[in-house]
Structures are given as C-alpha cells and as structure tokens.
Length: 118
Image (cartoon, rainbow, N blue to C red; front, side, top):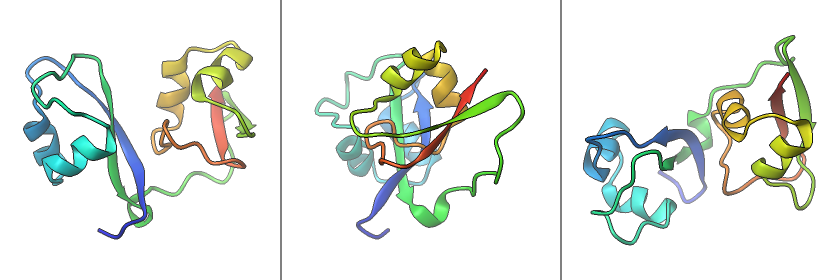
C-alpha cells in the first residue's frame, strides 16, 4: 500500500470480534488498523465501535453519476462533520454513513458530495 490511505469501508464491531479477526477479514496488519483508528489498547474493543478500514483510492468503488431518487446531495463545506450534516438535514448519522460507505468519517474533504437519504 502507498502512503495515501483512505477509508474504503466502515466496520461496526460486533460481539466476538477482535482486532485480529477484523484485520484478517480485510487482509490488513493489525498495527495499521490500530494506527488508523487511534487504538492504543487492542484488548478494549467495544461492541458498536465503528472502525475505518484503510486502503488506497484504487480500492474505492466508483459512485453513481446521479444519486438515487430517494437521496439528495450535500457538498461538504469547511467545518462540516457527518454529525452536523445529518442534523442539518434532519436525518440519523447512521443513515448518512450507510448512504456513503466509502467516506472516511474522520477526514471529510471540502467539496466532496455526500448522499443524504430523504
């Protein structure tokens, strides 16, 4: 992998998961998974935690040219967070994240188009 990593998937920790099993599922070193997600204690993984799965841009799926009819588009502006975007549009944060699975929630880029479910 090159040094330009992006979040290619978001994984939600479930009962029985370990960093090793998650890293193995995505063919990643545990140390990279820990570094990207700022995990200092690999033995304190909480159910429901959302982990950024790193990869390079070539692993991203290409978004559709037009959003689905039940979606609108939000263009990321300076200061935006996924939480603030969801609140602004009156939708749940999880719904925004599910509609944009290839977005790195910790590194939103200004000008990125996000799909917002209606």
